[in-house]
Image (cartoon, rainbow, N blue to C red; front, side, top):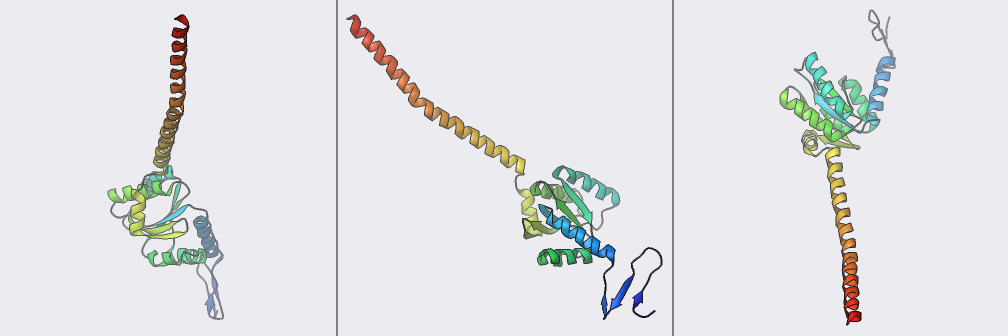
Length: 197
């Protein structure tokens, strides 16, 4: 049959209309799912996982759970379509080789730290780049992100600074009151001495 490509089994059937391939429903659904993950994530961090086995990938996924990160192996062509439709065209050149994306729903700094730590112990994992707050990151920026303090550490430091500031403010406000109390006591003692004389 001219213009139709069929395969045996539950595989994709594509019909050619006017020389263009009509994408299969499963591919369209997968592109939409990738777009949804990109739009619903705080960050999306791209890695190349060539050389990692199933056990390593399981271990990597487990290490990312603490930062609320979903690690997905994706098809480059479908991912390329999705990132372009979402507006991250600068990611397309990074989509070479076996790609997996860490979709971060929690702390992106912690997720980057987790990926960098795993890459340190498993050199097969390569950090390629990603997207954070709508900005495309290259590999160097992703590695720098991994060196930042995590959100929890920064919040703890801020709380410590605020607490110290409040204690200093309370001490500064209490000092004049102590001085007034001391002066009042001194005046009372002085008046007491004058009345006795």
